[in-house]
Length: 393
Ligand SMILES: [Ca+2]
Ligand SMILES: [Ca+2]
Ligand SMILES: [Ca+2]
Ligand SMILES: [Ca+2]
Ligand SMILES: [Zn+2]
Image (cartoon, rainbow, N blue to C red; front, side):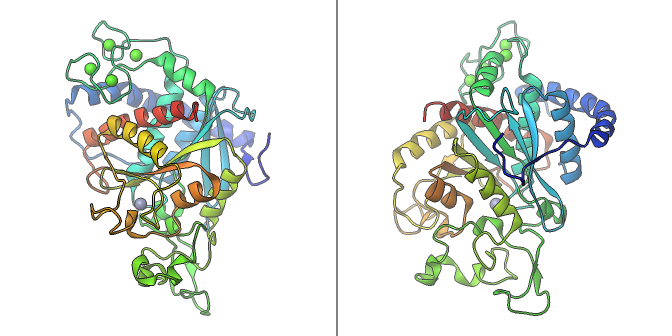
């Protein structure tokens, strides 16, 4: 094993015992959930009229432990660090031989850099659930139409029955899991999730850390990654300086690059795992797919590769691939309006990882269960596609 000391594999036997008892209840709930989902999505029956119940940090943690305990042959729970308020930032590794570092092509999936963007982690919890519960099953007829695997994950209605991707291949899923390593951090910012707000919840002592008393709380973690971090001082107007430099702003980027526990936890993990080829960082909302640079309208060196992967993702989830800024005019505004300190910029600029921003949904937190199932299901397909694509990079 090659993890640095921060990455503690949890081995508290007592706790695991307790969780196993809770786990029995959870397993019943989860299996009902998982089995019900594909059909409710596929049939669009809309029988669940109640508002969807999103996870919180505690229910996610319990569920991940329970899933891990039931699938230790292909998963590993790792704490990559702790938040200011002491919550573990959980990473689920999914692959065969999970305790070994096999150096297989890897992908990194992240949610909740912004704590109030609930779909970003919900879709990843769903994904973990689906993969762990499906792995190793024989090919089966998911939609009960008598045909097996007639409509795979590709965003296309392969059998022309009006339903999209309703019966994917279980064998293909197993092959992808066996050949790659899938790292999932559903909640990068658990403190933000707890407070249901965008930033983390570490205290600020003035925008430049020069005050004696707490002036506000929280840093926008997706402005805190250290790539070309000082650029705004050269071109201040393009980079929303008043917002990123003000500790009370929702976009406050912190005192210095990687000043926050959460961004350090992610970057330490990435630096120690150089087999990561592609990353998807989930946010909500607006149904778009973006990629670097976020600070510039220049093409990236791997522009064609980004566009080709982005177009395939777009085929699966029907989101718009944003290649040249919000203005719709090439080079008028940089992608993301000149955003400094994003994980995408750092992952690609420093680590060479093909990093995408995924903006889920048409609203920040949809409450209609059918809408939730729909974006969750689509992005199982997206995540599997990306894992498979990483094998040939
Ligand atoms: Ca079928
Ligand atoms: Ca199937
Ligand atoms: Ca179909
Ligand atoms: Ca299909
Ligand atoms: Zn966001």
